[in-house]
Image (cartoon, rainbow, N blue to C red):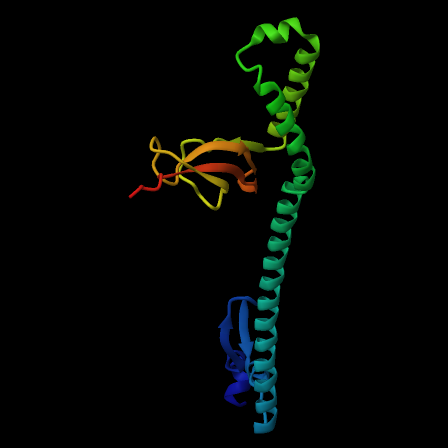
Length: 197
């Protein structure tokens, strides 16, 4: 009797914990694959192509996610400023209400005595409430330094009282929608008088 026939453990290989038993020598041999050089090169090429495809997939997915985020941001911006044209059409009406009632500023008695004037003041307040609800804010310019990004100079006024470039009068209010300027203020700016020789 040969030693292999006497000892059955001779046919067993290393212990495999996943299977809870030792691999037999036949199983151990089955794990080893003999490939020709051509087959090996073909498998290597396919593996490299797979890695390139995976890399391309990851990049494409990242680009898609970036495009999705960009689209969402643009959609949000569009919704935020969708009513800009409507607001710009309403602003001259509000300017006229402000000018008309500017003559009665500080004269509350006139509003009490004239119900039509009181009604006009109520409409003006409603327009300003509407602007507030839409995120529209006016800004004051008188006394500020002229800023070409926020102001439109209509004319220069010669004066000794103010430094050159300071806004002395606001002809038309400027407005922001959220944080974007939608209408610059139309102003008059100070200019030093010419020195007579």
